[in-house]
Image: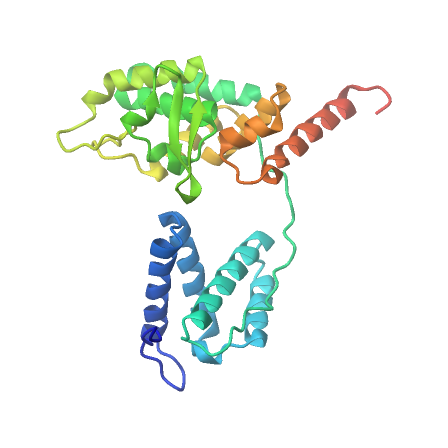
Length: 309
């Protein structure tokens, strides 16, 4: 098999266009060969573009020492360990691919290590906070179809524990009314079924009843629509959640509702494996984080109430 064609590379300092040529090829590799989601590919390429701007030199001239200097600069700028870890993963993947494709002779990132990620507990609103957020949204449901939609968004995010991207990509055919389930396509195009409780089903039914008032002849078969009849944008859904949870006294975004759903399930006695399956976590270790949240709440209640705490 013949070697892959080289992008235009100069022996001296590479131009911005040369970096662009490599990153475009890598973008195609991530999307078409590794089948990563559009959001994941976009994040990797964004991190790599920032890296290339910081390095300001030819791909062929990048060494392990250069990359370590880049990481040191990120640390000095106060970047979070999670951000650094993500960028290290992006760099390692990119240089390994570039070496395998013979765009470079040696992989400079093969021994690049990221700092240990601090496992901070997520901010989780309490059940009372979520209830007040839902009530505040329900109180304005008579303002029109979009207000009805907003309540359905909150109920589905909290009731199903799904990600905002999963919510935005839902189609009408993904709602299984007979079994009270949503068919969700998660990370890596993995499909799963998510159960919905009675409040979420009622809110979803109410929205679908008024959905035609928002839809147009060109509207997609999306469950949730924006004000102009197109598929709802994730930014709109995030704004809905932030405004509602702010009214509930503990402002979070859609992922905060996902955290809340998992934590409240475990506090209610659900087993870890079931919660893992509902959330679509590849590893149960990710789901175990929520057991620490529940344990910390128990300790806080003990310290507050016990006379000998």
